[in-house]
Length: 156
Image (tube, rainbow, N blue to C red; front, side):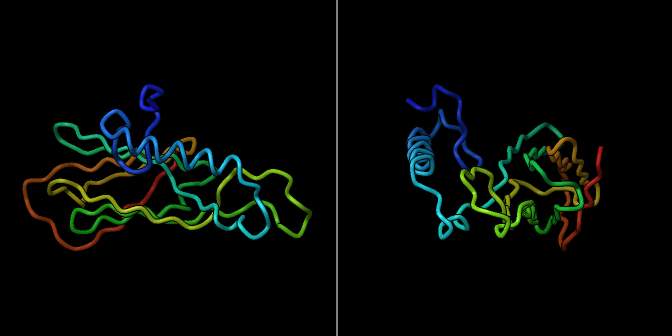
């Protein structure tokens, strides 16, 4: 029912394959939209960037939306075929300035880890940020690469 709208549930699964996840997401959205946002539950709204992972013949391409963040605000680590994105989206307004009448934007620290299906070339992984969209290109590798490597994000 909700999958016809093309909405993507949280995580890396598509709605059309998991209609129950879409139903849960839609129910959560309805509750979030109807519950009043008070000073006490404002901190419950946390920032969780949305990401897509695409597999090509020679590489994986991760694309994520990070509105309001710059390349310097995101840390990327690739360790044992697990790609981890972390950072913090800081609030731009001080709560002491007055009462918020309506709040929809999310803030806070985030950490997303994605297990890649096969061995990758950690040394040649690149990341680029353009207009709030992060693109990480992770070449596939036949050899086993162990250890950790930090990936620097460049601005386009």
